[in-house]
Length: 108
Length: 120
Image (cartoon, rainbow over all chains, first blue to last red; front, side, top):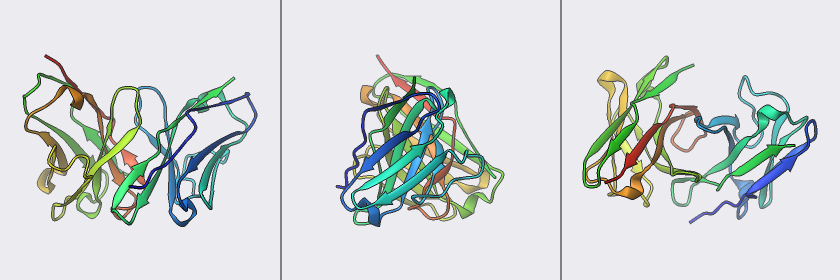
C-alpha cells in the first residue's frame, strides 16, 4: 500500500511562515491535495492538484510537489490558521484514496 | 456550488444495525461521485469508499470492504453508509465528501459529519 508521512506538529510564530511536508515514494508523480481541519469541524480543501487554491482560500496558502515530498506553505501565519492539516493522494496502483496522518499547526 | 447535509449523531449498542445518510443539494447530484471518510477520535482521516449515485457504481477500500455497505437513492439525492452489526471500534465521526470531478479527485465539498458512538 502507498503510505504518506507528515510531521506530527509544526509551530510557527505569528506573522511568520509555516511549512508542512507530506512524504511519499515518488509523490511528485501524483496529484497532492491538502485539507485544513479545525476542532469539531469538517475538513476544508485548501490546495488541490499540488498548487491550486480554491476560491475563498487566502493567497497565503500555497503548495508544491517534487520528488518524494509535497509541501504546504502558509505565509504570514495567523491565529486563525491553527488547525490540523491533512495531505491526500490517489494511489492509481490500488485505486485508493490515501490520507496522511495529519499535522497540527500551532501559531505562537 | 453545492452542499452535503448529513443525518444526526447516533448512539448505538454493539451488535445493532445503523444507516446514516448524506443528502446533496445545489448541484446535479447524479453527475458527481460521493465518498465516505472515517475519523476515529483524535485520529486522522481514512477513506472508506465511494459511489456514483447515477448508477450506484461503488468502490470500497479493502480496509472497509465487507464491514460497511454504501448505497444511493438518486430520487432523493442521498447516499448512505450502513452497518449490519456495529462494534465499539466503529465509534467515529463519518464524513461524506464530493470529489471535484472523477472518483480520484480531491474532495471539495464535505458534509458536516455524523458522530457515531457504539457503547454497551
